[in-house]
Image 1 (spheres, rainbow, N blue to C red):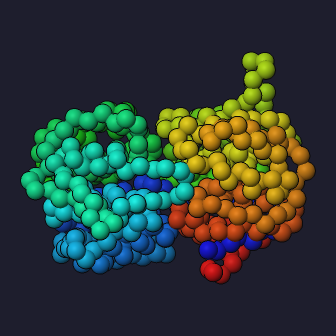
Image 2: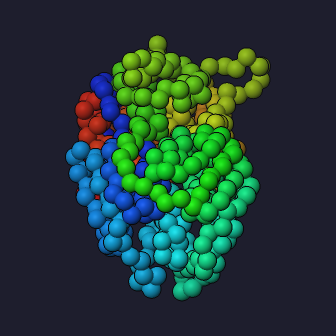
Image 3: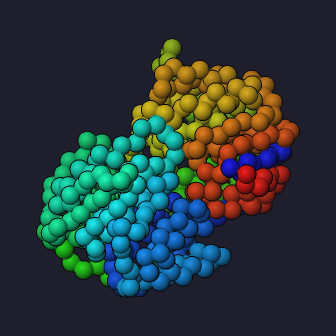
Length: 433
């Protein structure tokens, strides 16, 4: 795994054009299998997960043409074929499970590894997906360390209520529902910006979806889907990341942002650490006057809190970014991950910088920030924004630090080191080991 070497202590300055959201791009790529018509996608990031899915498409016989520099992808699945005995979907990507519905719709069968996984965030069950596949008429069985899903008849429309507002389960429901002739409804649907973007892509292909951005989706399915052209939005995760990097280093970073309406709660969370976010003319910037400082709540004898849960709560994927701010900010703050049970085990690495962090339980921790920190060599788990959070702390400290096993960043952020260098940071990747 590659490591990031950073010589910190330099305020970041400049402009960044963020890439598209991995969590929008991957389900959209999976959905393209539902049409035999040509598609053109703009703003496709050159990240490892995208490369893996495109390699699957090539192996299945699809026509794939990617201009990496321009981010333009032309796809045509006219001659695509699938052989359950030979083809395998990559288990290292959680998004592999979203290839199942289009494979079922086209070929009546799909096969994936029994333990598809992404970032190491704790137990991430696939039971909700299996339940959706079965509701729509799929037969799911384990065989030879894989899951085999068969559809003996056409998909049937269903009404379903999720136990939990899961992003990928919501997207899998929509992928099934567009192929089921009739009306399907999903209650307790996820509504994150990337889910909305995915639904807008489906609508571009001709899917009839009502309730986009709400917790209830209604899908009129059964009609053939068309091709077309689609442009991805900027990733609100990457926008927030570079705003936070500007704030933690005391710099001036402007980030392209065409959807500031998604940011009120994120802006208020920045404000808890003394950072003001300004949105103007399609760009966003973080401002701070003086050192970072935790703002005391109006209610006496309680801690300032950042509570992360499914949208429209504060996004759980951004929690590590703000833990990094909490480590640097004068004062104490509580961080609460209401989603994953294994996502805070990395915070012991912060002590190598000299940070004081107390884990209350698997879901909550407290930062005691503002103390002196020193450069360090730290180990990142396989979690994208944890690697970035450790990098943020390192970038704010004068001297040489190393973030080992930082390669997960490449799963979501193309040109990460190049963007940082354009902002004045001395940073480089080590060769893959």
